[in-house]
Length: 312
Ligand code: CP
Image (cartoon, rainbow, N blue to C red):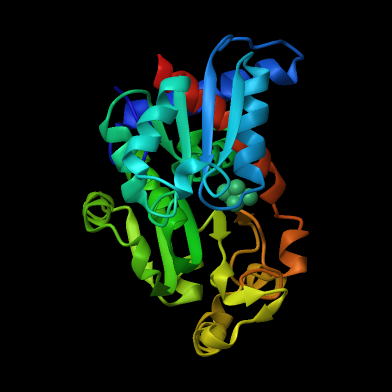
């Protein structure tokens, strides 16, 4: 049975197939054609954390494919009362694919280990494969051909999104510069790093100017964990870490000045939600080079393709 967890399990051909399928389904939709390929199919959407894009894109995608998505909040269902393993095995009896936004990738892997139905990691602390594939779809559309994508930059913190994007680039033969002073320790997957690094396509640097040289795309993501804040204010227990990160990451902020100085022709990307004034500025979101909102929409197109690929 196929699962989509970290992209370690997919071959280059698998990844190209998914990307081509997404382009095909999107083109049909843009022509006003219906795509009822998954009638009577149910996607179970289990969330242990909040979401805007992931929930909307999966649910709307299933509607457009003629199927149905069922939203389950782990905090308001019986998951909080019982053994996870029993509950997830019962949950998977009701659908054809499970999409799981988990606190821990190990929980996604546990669900997949039963091989009852295909399982998708919809953003854990280590991986975000749907985001990475959606980002690649956005770059392919923008460039017109995957062969034209030679180099991208990842600016800021090394995390779950950079992990999967790095591995995806490595498998597709695209250079990626990881321009970062800090790794989110919880996101580290040594096996994934080895796979990506041995491709020769991953460059690590703390030097923004050097890293951005020749980049056609620059991508960033939040440096601050959302648990640092309460009602817009920094919680006392996280104040020290907040101050440390603010100082450390300031030179890595994606802003118009940085883009215009080091990568004036590079398209700017962010997986959203954007934290304005931290990793990105308003003038970078609204920059002439920004393709951020195309990225958001492409989550739906790529996920339709992922579900179809998993069920094929
Ligand atoms: N990028 C992303 O996964 O967005 P959400 O957290 O809103 O789902």
